[in-house]
Image (cartoon, rainbow, N blue to C red; front, side, top):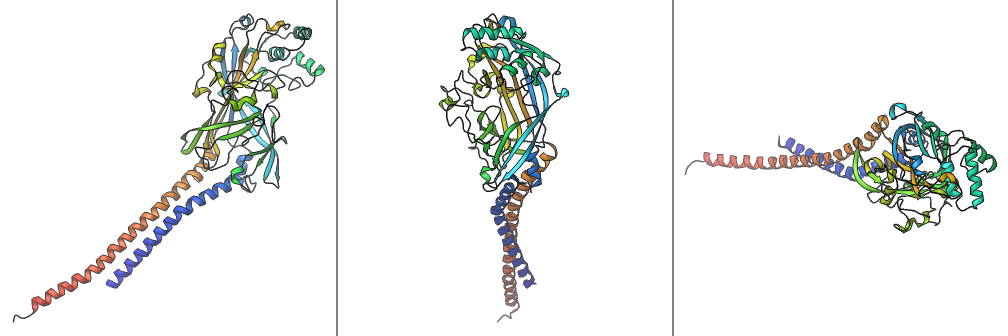
Length: 487
């Protein structure tokens, strides 16, 4: 009986020690296994069906919501009064992105062009594409500013040309025409006699170049040689730096293409990316932790310095000539047209900009941009990129269409591109990157706890077996003494 108990005690002890050792080993090996799986699933590799397909054809729906600033007092603006606008929208478009011309290179990079198409979603919109909106006429007011330094006689001739083609300072068109283009005899004339002056031939529209187009030839790192470089841009259209801006720093192409980032991010990490539409590299900064449908995340937002001028933030001097903080002058990459990018409603901009236009109400919830990232993988979970397109308007002598317009940076439209992981993609993501690591973590501590309990049981059994013979011997001696004859 004692031999059986001793064997049980030894068995419990061995099992307990093994469980503690296994749990301890799992504590160190588990995170390594998880990190190794993350690396394998983050590298851009055609042999990895799930991650490669997710990179090649973004499996989640993306939407672009467009808001117009409908001008309420166009006649009064021409007499020098403040512009008064009302926001119209959203007009929502489903965005489809697909990478094509994918070519892998021996230096662990891959080249591709990403094509984008937009489809109107009436059920998600606050109106129809047939809605009529009044906005500044870029062809007239933009050209006027561009011609400001030309000889007076030439400006008179330009003004006469506008009149010939019945082009005024403001446009009243349907949303569809303003978005995707409308027929203009002036555009036909300029493309015929001044080729290259306009960004596109054919119809003129604010997003005419976007639909059925691509964002240029990106070459990015696959991460095969160094996972810290995955998704980072090696070149864009064959360029490793830009020529739009005034300093080497401003012309740098930094970060990724803006869709994914390298894994294993910390709160000190930033989100740098190159935006062909903004003609520059941008960088978001960490704001706070959070959770999206059970998946942990880091929220990154635009710093107030993103569109600050060179006086308020000297590193931005290279993006000048600047105006008030909150505006990015993109004329150098937009055929010198006086176009500026900002946050919607001049959010995070110099407050004086709000004094020049009536009808703006900026707030972070509606107008701030953010990207929610799963820090372990660098995969965006929830994205909202919000930007505003503005036109510099002013009186230009000789061009009578400008009347007595007070100089103002005029909001025209703002748009939000948003999307989030959902459905089967979210389920797979949650299972592989949240549930399994959590199960593994509980397992390692479970094994350690079970092992310690088993060792304690083994010790108790051993002590009991050790105490039992002593007790039996003592009882035997006492019995013998009791039975001994009295002398």
